[in-house]
Image (cartoon, rainbow, N blue to C red; front, side, top):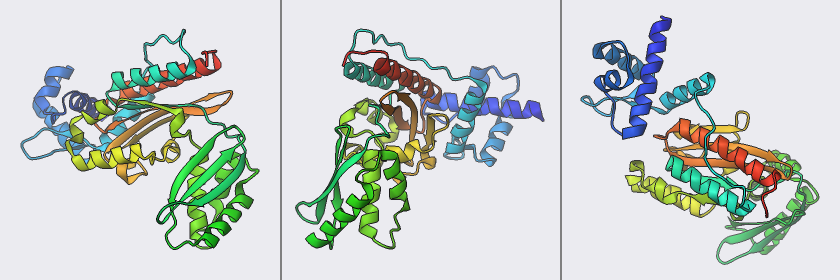
Length: 333
């Protein structure tokens, strides 16, 4: 039984490897030919059938080979991590670069290595204190939320305020000021979660937006690269997937805080349907948090579920280590 289970895991890894490399459904003869399994194609076909029944593989149509499901990718990744098959690798010399230039080079190197969108964030401090919150009416049914922190950050978010008159906005600003001003970011995070939306839906909604704004690095402090590489992937021939994702990214509307909430020892691998954001159901998010004296940041790759996870995980782990060295190790700012 153990031999069969080991062989089925080998078959699963083979399907993942072949499909990531080619984007073509994988058949039994390809696996036997390319992966050195000492069994017949008929035996591999039986294993493929079992893996399909367990939900690890699927068959696009009757005459096709198999492709991995989100569960199949997850099982293969967890096996790689448990066996130590993933190693941090990112060849890059940053010794003569400033912190800003170094972060940019790390983002570019990650994108080139993984063919995914790469993001490198500045560290943000959980100890920063909120010193002011303001709500200002804008054109139409919109309001601007402005949050100022004592570390110099100024976060701005546009909100819908349909049905809210100026007095209601002023009252909401007063409530939010009493709740958040003078609190550090970690305290604000807890307070926002405790607000009951049934008491005041607008205040609860603005509080959650305030929490997201101050507990993650702002767009201005993130380096990103590889949008064209990501959109060149065959999966983005689905114009709707491309439109929704690009719109979310350009509007700075991806909740990285929520995605990073699935961290295991600072590493996040969120695959397709595992993502809490419905717009990213066909997308995978691989990230590694890093901690330096000034706070916590992250390095991430975003790409299709048909991603080379071993490479992506190794790259973000190496990238996070390099950013930490760059910041605390003395890159010129």
